[in-house]
Image (cartoon, rainbow, N blue to C red; front, side, top):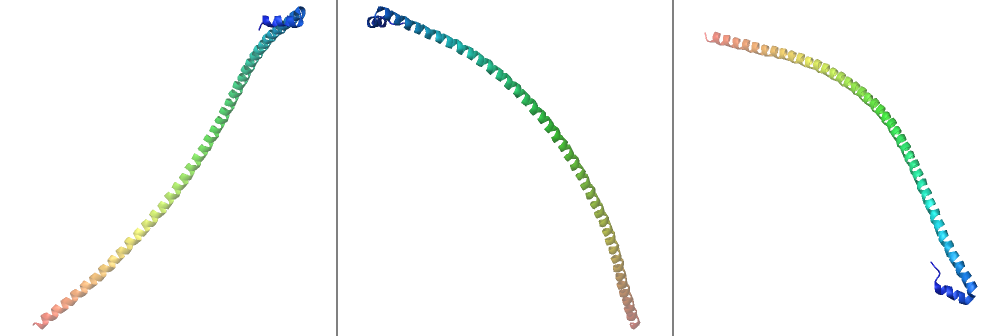
Length: 163
């Protein structure tokens, strides 16, 4: 900001022309120095901003690289875990199949034993029923024979008495 003419005149009146002009020159130099400082500061800030941008770009690149490495590690761990899970799954499937086969064999054995026992019990029941039928037939035959003999005797007695 230029030094106002009014201030310049006042300084010349108070300090004299030579001292006032020196003071004005000094203020102008000071003001010019401020402008230079401002320019230097702007240049310094521009360099700082540029370097900061570079550093940020470097950090972004490092971060991208680290992220890629971590992604690769995660993918590797995921692959290994998937393989382990698949291995455990196939072992469990095999074990389940083996246990299922064992259970099916045991069920088949129990079914065969039960079928054999049912066949034996059925044969025994049929034999018992046949024996009971034969015995019942014998008793029935004895009853009818006894009844026929009695009737024949009664008839013979009635015929003898009626003559």
